[in-house]
Length: 325
Image (cartoon, rainbow, N blue to C red; front, side, top):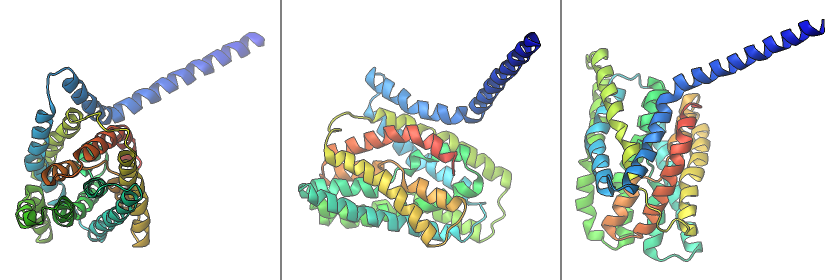
């Protein structure tokens, strides 16, 4: 009897081990693409540290994605998507979240007694969301409806970034005369006009082939894979210990996610829309913050350091977060 029990126990343990291995293999098969995308960030870091590439190549890649990859992805995602009530409310949630972030950044900057240009840099960090870093993961993990919701959330943030945030950068930098020029450049950005074009075609019922839209979406997904690689090339360790840098990162991703979640529930959003709002508002510091800080002479070390830290942390939590939406 004892021999039979021992054999039975060994057989059970063997099956449990096989089951665990099977579950592990299944998990790796389901998530290898997300892990590979996260790894691209670290590939960028290695390429820069070994001198095979530099921040200049990272900025070029981001510019390419901004002008080519994102418009293609946005068109493929929105032109044929079924629009619902959530698509109107999500941009408003994004704008309100950024405005709350502006108030919080101003409060802490003045509490830290920072100079005006550092206060402006904190404001840029908290108001600028790097949702483009979420796109590679979201495009592979989220369904069509949830992904279109994320794009609409980003539209609200993008319109704010290319208008009010740009004006604030000018004012903090003391370059008010640049505002008309900057706004003209911002409003001519390809992603914004492609987004309006896709929405117009969608609402107008344009007869566009679903197969064509799927192919466009796939091309966009592939091009956006350059984002984590480029951000790895842009990482810098300078200034990462400053308390205003850490505070900016916490306000951007921590406070932003909590505020967006609360606002989404408050306005009556349900299902994936609530998760998408929280996910988008938790995005790392946007590259827009670095660009505007450099352009307007703000505290560039603060924005670059905050972007580096939040992007590094984002490469760790974003792949998991998108699977929970």
